[in-house]
Image 1 (cartoon, rainbow, N blue to C red):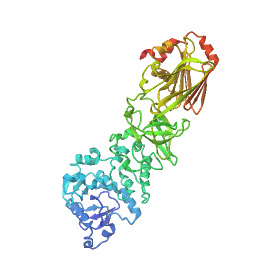
Image 2 (image 1 turned 60 degrees about the vertical axis):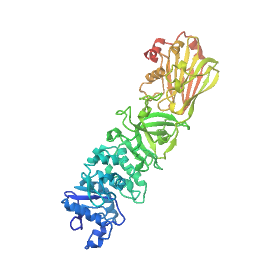
Image 3 (image 1 turned 90 degrees about the vertical axis):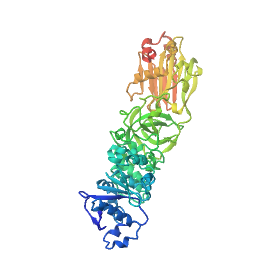
Image 4 (image 1 turned 180 degrees about the vertical axis):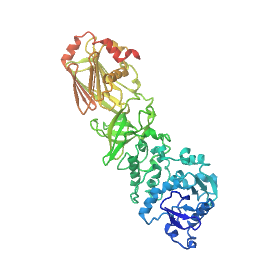
Length: 572
């Protein structure tokens, strides 16, 4: 570490800064600065008088001498930039050098009065961010080196100017703040070299990495990847704006972590975003375990989810999420890529509360790979169709009903009727808004006899795989106000927490449910008298004549009393 003797203005080298009391300068670079070669070994300081930057170095040393410091550090002339090794070491050590200084002089060369401090360009430079946070003591000086104030006294004003919490200004510790929060402090700051937008932030994240001038925006990508090497902070994905061209999961620059975002994370809640099991990263992407909430099915029939980027067991009702699209409609492969939805990069989970079909616990946790692909835009607008193909030995009277937004909470019998008869072969189309591809989308209430009916409900599960729920019931149960949520409760009770099962049947109540496990799943139900096929967004039901014969021989559904309890009709 090179330091300037505050009396002689000569440079001396020290192997370590430990035990040294020195002042350090924070400033904006000018056009004609005093460089390392100018002070190192120079015998006549008069030769430097004509340099514009000399007065700044001299006044800094004079102030340090008055404050009883024998040594001062100024970045323009205390780093030998002709040595790439020394330059790299200095930049990687700079945060630490500012932290270990006895005092930091912040020279605001463009203002004269304290009232104008908010307009100084010093607050818009990238390197001055760490120079504000790292030192314990910071003193501000105006254009003519008039003392203005110190960091302690200006903590409220500085908080307003920089949007940095008072606690961080006075005693910054990197581990106290989430990645997105610290990144947001750099929004609006600029550096002369593009790479320095990343290098000037290394100290805030306690990161060291080699300098590669010429890599341009890749420097910020390397910074994010280095942060991911040592941190499990999911808020690194909480940004908006321009993504990386080659890897849409990560941001293109610090400006993406905009402090005016509606989903700016709570300052200081670093633990909120800490992933307990971490992640692994390679050239294919990021392998990670996340909780996903179903969001919608896009126009290409691909499922879009909200990935909760905090531990859901801590903050279930609030928090933040990003959008992931499963690359294949089937859930056999767990490959995803990040997408923007309706020009949004992330979402405040509170936005879901109060929506129709909202369910706090409609999520699942899975191991997935976020592939190294560009981010693409996606739209939740528009509608899609769930197709049901029916085949039976004879035409049957039926109510074919479709859910719409105005009837979500209505009894099933009040849902709009789209057909009243099922021919021997019939294709039905249940339309739904993409954003509402949740819950029961439609159902068939098929007359088998005067006393018996077959209720078949269709929906997607939490992974957007098609589900069919079938039950033999009587008309009284249907007419008394059976709702979609009653059927769904029975469905969840039937499966319980058995995520691996693809079908379940309760013989006592005749409730049957099946969900697709891959591109095509086939089931034989009700004693092999109905063949059920589930294929992405299509359901096929082939009814055997034996089914009608057997059911018409019954006078009532089996254990009708238990069926009513199972559907929870009287608990509403």
